[in-house]
Image 1 (cartoon, helix red, strand yellow):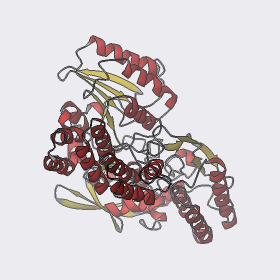
Image 2: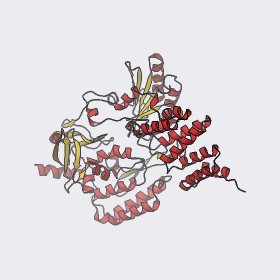
Image 3: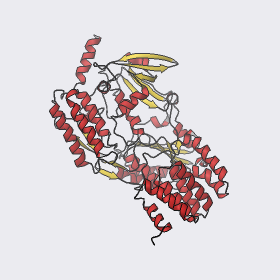
Image 4: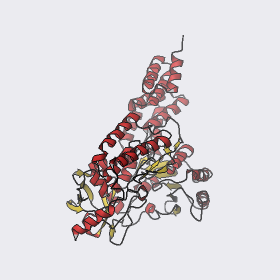
Length: 539
């Protein structure tokens, strides 16, 4: 009976294109590359074309020796090499046409590791356990190996979408993690004890659009002892709640799309009216579950926030972000960063601030596989902004134990926020007094705090140096610029700002050296080129 079930499951997850010849697969590979180059405005913006071409040639040569699932996995890895989160082939999605099956498990990556969050009844011994091994690999090795399939702009997006891939038999089999029948041994640790279970492909769950599973009666889940606020209405596009005890207006915005009965603009105008009529000391906007939508609707959000004295107060407006904050939600984060006083809390976003998007689907003619290609360059912020994500001012995310207890560290951090936490606030006072030693101690204390692990200190220090120079505090500005250049030696902008500090203090030789370092890193840096002309004018 068990053997028959395994054979049946394996048969069900096989697709109709198993009989394609090597020549047909090679034709689809050529078509995939041709369509990427035809549609994408700049496909090789993250990888040299020669490197991509080499990967294509290697895959083309190996196709005759690969199975269907191995070819699909290699196609996904090839597309992921481009470093564009919107240009992807996702075997977990029904739209891809891969028709990959599933194991009877659902994984989730918490701050303290990979955990089993759901199983069927037969695999319940794994439920709630921290994954130690998947087949021959440790959990971290499995995440790294399978993560190569995920098209990404930063590691947060990989962390978000690798766990669903780990639950796909064809993926693990193609990568040599599972055996030829799709069987794989999982070891978990729970309560100080290890448990090992052999998983086999299951017909109980099928992939859904979120990369999870459609839960049936035979599935079990790890649920928090009490549902935290941010998980109460995950399927609603947007909703609000007034937390009276803390005088907080909480708004969760899960999808940038109009609801059936209310538009985004109307909802946020309602939020503004609500804030006027209630005792509200702080506003929390939660984007942690927002994977995007129609970014033209973001203007309605910004107008409502800027039009409300209550919503936009400094040190009282917080935006919660995380790995799922992506695409149009990233566009919204960009606008909030640019136009408001919001303080980001949580984890880094899954997108770069400047990114390609507006992907269109392309179906390969022989295999029927569908992948997506970006069509538009979204440059919301400075063209020199090369950040891989929007990072939070305060890092706050749940461990598995905090999840089980229904705690939300990000919301807790917003409610407990103290403006003194900001790096510029910590450094400015001692620098204005001329106490450089105290400023350096404050800086070291700041970066040693794990809550600040994602703070972009380069941007913070640059802004502080410019502000101090503008106020005539040239020694303090120079000290901050030197610190920034020392902490970020590969940043042409940091070297340029240091050159500006030296020039303002009347030291053209040191300024020229800093400008030269900036130009060695970026020969086209406009500021450094102009600085060199000013300190070394042509004779």
